[in-house]
Structure formats: C-alpha cells, structure tokens
Image 1: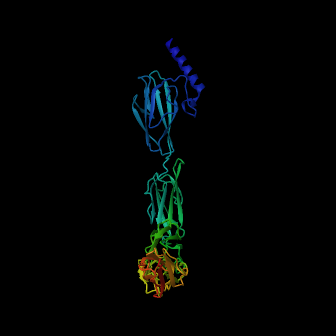
Image 2 (image 1 turned 120 degrees about the horizontal axis):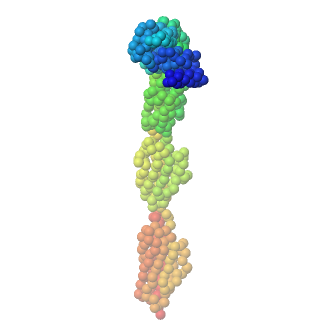
Image 3 (image 1 turned 180 degrees about the vertical axis):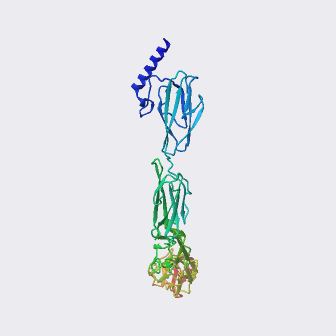
Length: 529
C-alpha cells in the first residue's frame, strides 16, 4: 500500500514539473524528467558551478557553466539507497565522495555520466554537460609609450592616458600586452589570439598637435574594452602674438621677434597696464605679467625708469623674455597756481599764463608780503621768493617802484619768471586844513581851506577862546599855536586874551607829508567894554 502511495506521489511531481516546464527552474533547454527513476540520487553537486536546473532526484539531465579559469570540476553524488553501486565516468565512487573531472579548453564541453545500479538490477544514468566558459578578460597587463611616460601610470582598470613628447619627436612606439593571450587586440596596435604583445610605431602630426592612439581588447567571450593614449607633441612656440601698454606706445612697435621696448609716459602717470597675448595658448607667461596675460604695474616717482619682464615658456620648456623699460618723465610744469600780495591787488588779476603784474601801494606802505603757490609741488621757486613760497619784501622810499621776481623751475629744468612791479605812492602834498573854528567868536572871512588869514572879534567878557583845527590829510603835521602829529586829525588849544583891544596872534602851520607847508593866521581882538 505504501509503495503505491509513493509511486502516486512521484507521478504527481512528474506531472507538476512537466506542467511548469524546465524554465521554472532557470533552465531554458530541454531536460529529462522521469516519472519514476528506478535508482535515484538524493544529492548532486558540481564544484565550481551550479546545476541547471536545480537538482531534483527525478531530473537526470543537467548543464553546468564552469568559469574559464577552471581546468576541472569536482562532482559529488549520493544515492538514496546505500546498497546502490555508483560510477562517475566509469569510476566506482562512494556516496558523498568528490570525483575530479578534467575539463577541456575554454569554450569546450565535457559530458559527465553518473550511473547507478541497484542490487535488484535497476539502473539510472544522470548526465551532466559541463561547459568551460570562454574568458571575459579584456584587460591589458602592460602598456608603454617610447619615448614618453603615461599619465597616469598604467593600471589595467585605467583606460585613458596622456603622454607629452618633445617638439622634435615625430613618432612614438606603443607596446601593449594582453592579460589573456587569447584575447584579440585591434585598433592602433594589433595582436591576434595567442599573441601576447602588440607593438606599433605611431607617426605624430606637427608640433603643438595631439594624436589619439586607440587599443581595443576583445576578450574570447566577445567583451571588449578600449584604451586610449593622447600623445601631445609639445610646441616650441614661446612668442607673443601681441603686446600693448596703456597709457603709452611701444618703441619700436611690437613684433614677435623684437624683445626689448621702451615707453615714455607723462609725469602724472603712476601705473601702466600691460597686456600680453601668447602665440601658443598652451605656453605659459610669467615674470611681471601672470599667465592670464594682463597686469597693472605701479611706477616709481617722476624721472625714474621701471623694467617690466615678460617670460614666455613654450610647452616644450623653451623660454623667451620680453622687456619693456618705462620712463616716467619729469614734469615740465613751471606754473604758479596762485599768487597774492599783501597789502595790494595784482593788476591784472592772477592767471598762471600771465607773467607780469603791477601793484600800487600807499606811500605809507614800507613792505609787502608775497605768497606764491607752485602748480607742481616738485617744482622749485627761487628769486625774491624762496622755495617755501612766501617772502616779506621791503620797499624803497615813497614814490619809488620795486620789481619782485619769482622764478619757477619745473622738475625737468625748464623755468619761468613771474614779475610784480610794486609802486609805492609819492608822499601827499595836502597841507590844507579841512575845519577851523574859534569858540566865542566868528572867523572873518568864513573859513575856506585856501584862505590863510582871519580875524576874530570877541566881547570884553571873553578872556580866552578855544581854537580847533582839523587837517585835510591826517598824515600831515600841525604845529604852531596848535599841534597835531601825523595820524592825528585834529589839534586844539586854549588861547588867553588878557588885554582888551590888544590883538592876539594865533598861527597854525600845516606841513604835508611831502614837506610842503602852509601857515594859517588868526588875529583875535578882545573888545574894550
């Protein structure tokens, strides 16, 4: 009864497997499934590898893909019954004992037969077809370029390299070694299956150009990988294609083969901008101008020179130096920016381009102060005014003139002379009185500056009078009966009249600043009664 149930179960499994199909177990090929294996295995493994489909005791046909590196596989099987005799490829093998089976070359298949014989005469054969896979190794194991060095250093996993060679190198030799000699190398360097190393001489284009070398490695299984080497034939071009300076102009005009230049700039220029353009964009600019090709260069003081160096290094290392000598000129500014005189006013009013001036001052002015301001602080003032720009100049006597010279010498040595002619007025000739009065009496005739003689009658009761006189020119001098010095406008005096009817004379002498004098006379009479 139990045997019938087992057989029924086996038939159910067989029917289920047939319904699901081999692909349910990952196998697309046809497999042999018996609904009633006479002598079944309980386990089956192949190392290295994996059975396709997965082991099932009623499945008798399997496939295994072994790695390319495997030269053999180990088959281990165990029958369900311990009384069964098992052979693997004709060699009696105990249950659970691994049996080594040698494999053929990559890409070949090896058939392994496991035959089972029961004591009752039942037989079952399991078949395993082992395929030794082709190699997928599409690597290089070595790569070199002569002359030159790979950047980065060779590594089989690095695919892209650059090599810089000198200008005079016209070709390079590339050697490449396959990791798997059965791979195929193609592209710029070739080597067929079985040939380990390929070599090729690669002609280069002109200096300053690049050549790409491609090496394609195809593994035996068809996988491929491409290594590339970019060979740069370095340029020897260390020329500039353009050179300018602002402000200023190069002398001589720029030419790539001309290395030395001079530039003259105005004294007011404190810096220049230099722009240099490389003929070969892969060259390097250094020195006073950075690689980007432009720099602002500060200059030293007026009258100095600065040398600017521009070094151009070609990709191959050759260098060339361009020099620009910049001369910052001395100033030619010999102008005054301001000129004043105290006391007094310049005539005409000051202007830098006007050199000659006149100034009239009063007769009382004995000195003047001249202040001169340089337009260029580096210029030098000399003459009657020192370099600090101010001097007090004594004048000669009234009625005389003095010429004041102010020499301005520019930093470049060119000079200019400003002159101021100061005329001191002659002394005044005004010896008149402007006012003349007598208290207690009246002048006869009435006062007039040009009238010098007067009479005054006073009553008997008046025994004194006050005489006041005011000079027309305060700088005149009043003397006589009344006194008033220079600068004092009015003089006054009390005149006693002691005796009636006796005339009392009063004299007032007015001396003008120039020495001319005039005498005013008053006769004062006191009445008898």
